[in-house]
Length: 392
Image (tube, rainbow, N blue to C red; front, top):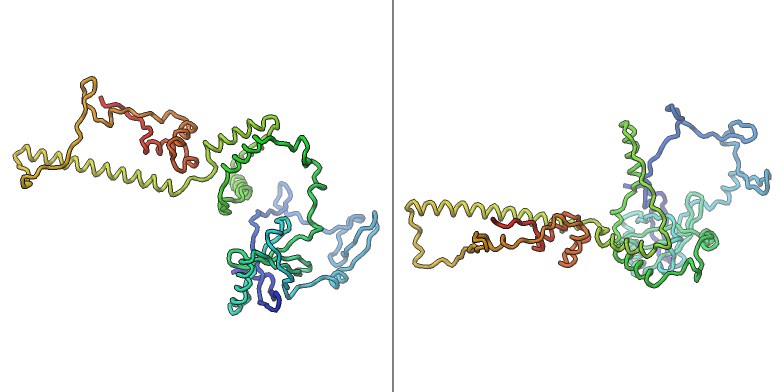
């Protein structure tokens, strides 16, 4: 179990509940040591006097606020300690705001809040459910580790969470920070209705449900692969080239090719249930063929016994109601079955795009998630095509 990083009282109005604060996230960044090239010697940082080059002891270091070149106001660590907010013993909610009014840029770090003991579960649940129903967050000032934070307490997935927030003067104005932003009404910001419609269509086609488990830190994986490859003495593959920026003059062409790519290739993983169903169908087909072959062997054995003098069992004068399909005669006079006589289209030579068009016409489900072979197999199952040889 995780250890709390803070414990205190969460209060709103006259209601209070002892709570503990827990880290909600963890970093998986690969850590490295600094070593000198060609050796295994670690490199360490030292605090050195810039003028003399001599190392300075930690206790001899003070804070300096620079007023001008070489001119400082010196502040001792004890003086900072005296004005430090220290550690809050209470998260006192002073008001509740509508979450829709809070822009995401203001949220910084997320923490979990849990009741300090099971006996406080009722008061904890009361605040959690009230915030959930109201879709509001409690706003409080909170001090931890010598720093004061603007904090939002909200209900998420049945628990309370605390989000440290940026103050208003910490959020930069993008219009004053980014000189290349297109101005409203300028030529570089104007797009045609057709371009906008195609872009919206592309967004709709690439829409997916939010599943955070589908995404992972691929850079971290590549770092581990790099370490393993170097440890094994293997060559390290060169990274793929970054995509070229879109040419504004070819924007319509790029949008069109993007839409076609989304239609033919799909952008989500194959539906596991569909794959499992197809595998089950294949298994059932094999079993059915096996049973048919077994039945044919038994029929042949019975016919052999009858020709050897075995009389069939008396059915009481009743006629059999089963019928056997009669073969048809082809124009050449050769007998062939009705099914084999119809030569269906050979799909094995078609591209994935051509197969996808046929799948669209046949309204096959999950076609956008299928590979080329899966599209061919699905079309053959529906009878839209199969490589068959006419019986000779």
